[in-house]
Length: 147
Length: 147
Image (cartoon, rainbow over all chains, first blue to last red; front, side, top):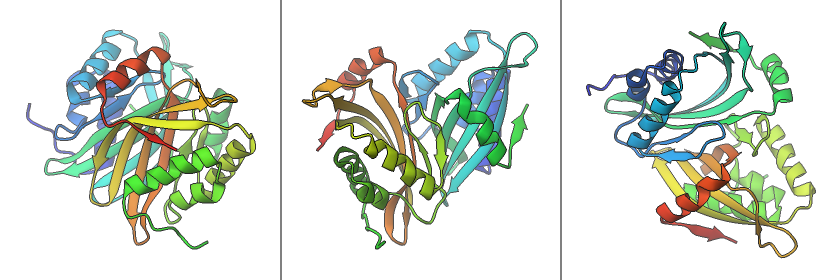
């Protein structure tokens, strides 16, 4: 597979959430680093290590056929020269009309910069206590919508 | 506060889990970076940002008076020159004799290297599906116990 080169962690992250919405497994996997041990934790799920297992986990997520929109907000970025850590709140909108918010999720996304640009090495997502989100939305700026 | 200098992320991480066990707030906070925006997510809890809020969250955890031992295992490390990401499984042993395992936790710990050595910038912990842990213990090596 010819590797997509992302010139910033933001570009890799935008592709990550677009791939989630579009259930595009190849686009999703283009975001992940191939030359590092990678870790993925879906909300409420086990820890998945290694590129092949991470790919299989996303294949299963997309095979479920559940359609959703993702709103990403409240991003906190901790940036280094060759690594970037993004803490984000994710709201998935599900249902036939894509207007029913699922329980809010917090994700820690870590990107490494290598010879082939920026790629994800770790995605840790977990469900937030529901009462906590509105406050978070109010107090964080820089919200954005991916779709 | 005179800042403790950790010469490796492993040293910072060992102090982090020792501070948890000893309920030592000053030791805990010596691990956290003071010059970065920091993020802490306790299992099932909200996202906490900023050093003062992170400190207050640990003060509350320790003030609860619950004593426990922590076993850290199955570490996966993604290391850069100035940043290191550690995915670990945590088993907390609780109860009067400290021998009752609580639900297993997975944590993503991120450390930055600055002028004052290595410090934590992000701790994201969430509860694992219980059935998943024994397999993880069996398949991962390099387990170690902090106490």
